[in-house]
Length: 330
Ligand code: SAM
Ligand code: SF4
Image 1: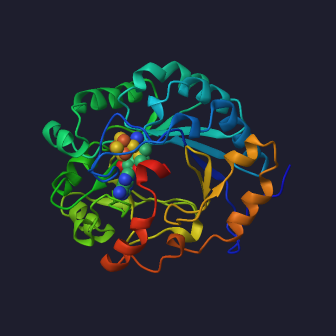
Image 2 (image 1 turned 180 degrees about the vertical axis):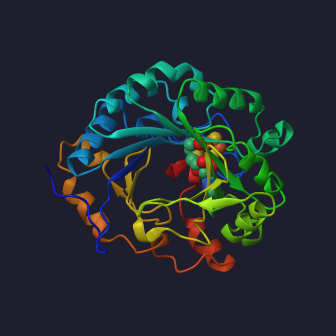
């Protein structure tokens, strides 16, 4: 067993998020740039055996939970093989998906021990879905969320709330949690990334979300854990829960335990830190990558990748230099 990955603030990193691809079958405006997107050539991507090898190293270094993400992880042809391989590791395994292809993987996920998934859905209105994602898959996504629930999976629905786009639907999403114990909605503050047309005025803040929900529902806060990104709540008498991920106005960096591996094998110690370390090349050369991993986490900043604030001016200069969200892995 190797030493755990602990940064200079004493945070132990036990949660690995692996991006499988920067490709996607949707084109969400907040995630992908509006202009033509250049995808990574396939030979840059970690292959299934390389993903498995790196995951095994991280597990030896104390990782307890692995999440597959992207881009859309389910567009990768060998995703079934990757899920099966990672399912054999002594960690919990989960994924974040837009659920359009999830019906093809139900058996595969169950065999790999996956019992909870995050599904992105930003609107309950089919026309709006088309506007936000530039694709017409609303009914499939909704049907697949129902399928996952009927198959006994816990479903966390991720909703990026944007002013003037879908902020009038917050309470409709909260209502979904009332009767369904396995339904957990999480509202995410809109974050700035390269080319995603972010500006401060489009954020619907943690405080505003609480106030909107308070206008219609009685609810209580649930206890949380140090590493939680979402503060969780439950409507009185409700079965499921809702949460708010207030990355911008209500950050949770203090308890951060997350490690990110991009689809091309670069290690990121924070979603917002532009610095990366290449693990794939040394892995391909047969070198031990552990020292690189420790050194990158020793340099981890306390919050937001070292950027001091999310003001409009700073966000435009700092966060625009980061990768696009779709190329990091959300
Ligand atoms: N394709 C999968 C999906 O949509 O669930 C996985 C990848 S996606 C990049 C992961 C998560 O990041 C999604 O829940 C998405 O809503 C979120 N996300 C993407 N861009 C974002 C942004 N600018 N602000 C907040 N959340 C964002
Ligand atoms: Fe694709 Fe997910 Fe990004 Fe939407 S949020 S474009 S579904 S990767």
